[in-house]
Image (cartoon, rainbow, N blue to C red; front, side, top):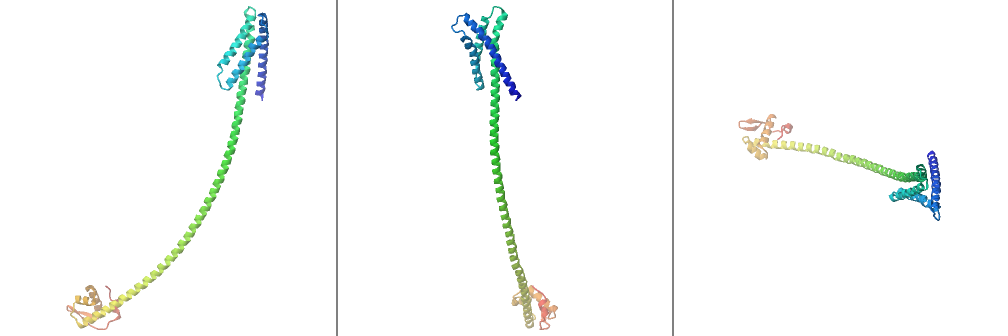
Length: 285
């Protein structure tokens, strides 16, 4: 507020200085034109002094538009020098009078140029303020767009998070069901294993019983053969019993331990013909 008041006061004083200088120069130029016999002496100061104003305004316009104003300055300086020279010619022959006569045109030029500079600065300042206002509006618009985009992004992220949570819950539920099915299948698999183990044990027991019966039968056959032929050899016994010689020797040793047979020289003889139940547990192949 204070700077604006100062600017207005400065501008007003500058215009007053221009007006005073114009009046003095105007009177001098009118007097000179009257002495020289111009038909309309009042037009001379208007042509010279007003041209300074016109050319200065042109310089200001070009400067504000960023254009070169060299010729404008040439015309401003030329018009001011012409007015000053004519004022000096109109003055008396002494130096002081000529200097005083030249001052109005010079001061008018300087004052008006100062006023134009002030207008130029004010215009630039106003343009800067307008640019700042435009930037603020653009910034507000961009801020609004940014807030809108951020809100949309947050909504999208929230929706995506909900979708992921739902998907995770579904997968956890699926994993839980799979674990339950795996547990059920494990139970189903373990039950046949138990049955199979029991079946294997039963089969093994049956095989043992069958093996025992087979051993008993073979040893009975062995005792019968020895009863008929005590001199028969182990190879012949193995061939008749359809087994190996090692098995024949094992059977003979088992029967000898039970007192059913005994060694007789190079062969075996039967001591008693009755097969005892203990023969079944005497040995295996």
